[in-house]
Image (cartoon, rainbow, N blue to C red; front, side, top):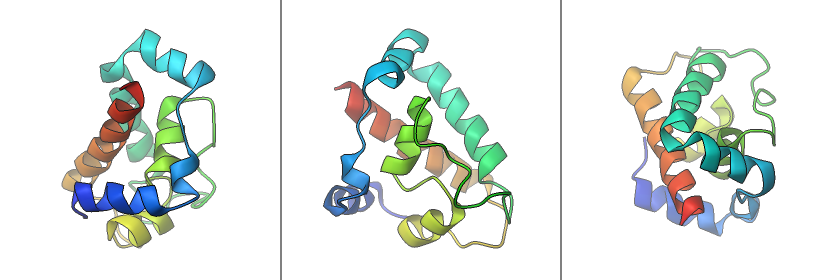
Length: 117
């Protein structure tokens, strides 16, 4: 896992990652539902879509819209096992640990909080 300040500095330098912003219906959904509910969703999505050693449809399992967590996952490179390996130094081919799941949710949380500011 990677130092969060270092990670966010690198994400800011990525033309692809830095273009993601929370707006429209996703921003409204976060405002109405609240951060705690959205973080519950983030935990669920990470467990269901990323935690397995070889997730189904890896690389295509995270939509690009329709939920604030999906936008956050693309912005923070927590969207697939390939990105987890490249950006977060979490190897493919084995299940995620509880500590790694907690780390990924905290990365998503940090990005969402920055979007609320």
